[in-house]
Length: 173
Image (cartoon, rainbow, N blue to C red; front, side, top):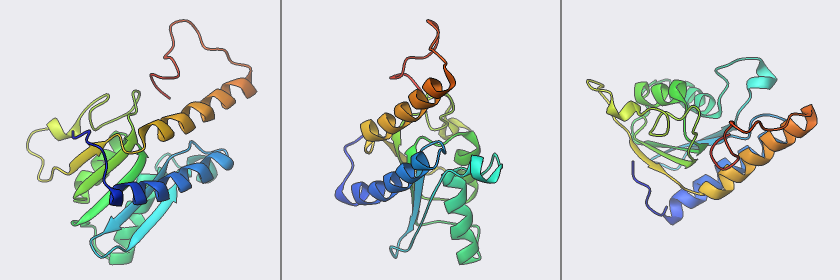
């Protein structure tokens, strides 16, 4: 994984993903936003919609990959970059590999479900026919902050206090 400082282009597209994450936050969804951009600059943006749809697969990354594939009428998304505010889970990382997305740029690591290095790393699996380039840490603090705030408010509304053995707010969502 490359944790380099993101360039101007990455920052631009990550802001679009952050807009979707903020939208998810406002409607009570886990605040993850994603944008898939092709080499011509055409893009698809969405947010988590699992509560809204009742579907476990309605992750922001899954939705933008599905939309782009449908629009192209092709499941192969070579020469596309996925920007997402949170490190993709195993399902979404698998979809990235299967759909041949060339590059992934994510914000905050996901210490519970992250599949590009935090919990597991699909890039270390042998015999895959595609390995995307992955860059983490783009707008990391902002991405982590919105997740912490979402879960802090949810716990407060439910009257839940963190137990001494639970992850700290800095360690995970």
